[in-house]
Length: 124
Image (cartoon, rainbow, N blue to C red; front, top):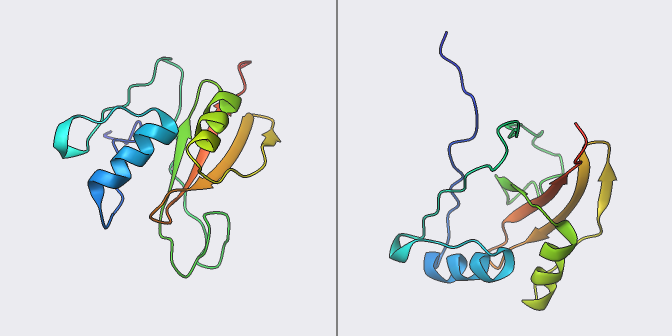
């Protein structure tokens, strides 16, 4: 039977796609391709997973429920290093939260989109 096996992409609306792509390149090290503001992110581990989830209409996990309809979760290899990089670019950074499956932090980009940063627990 046909089924979804991963996340194929995340798309966000932006008032200025070029400026937002530049911000993500600076704050997260994402190398976008040309003027298309596109990048293919390939998981390095064959056992990696991606999550597709829904939050209630009044849930604040993704940020302001009256304005935000999406949140991107980025898997990172060094959460402290990414957070330091974000701070260096002037980005906001929330406190790190420890969970059984890894460490998390959250931030908002210049367009108001909330993103979640996740360093998975290295033990299976």
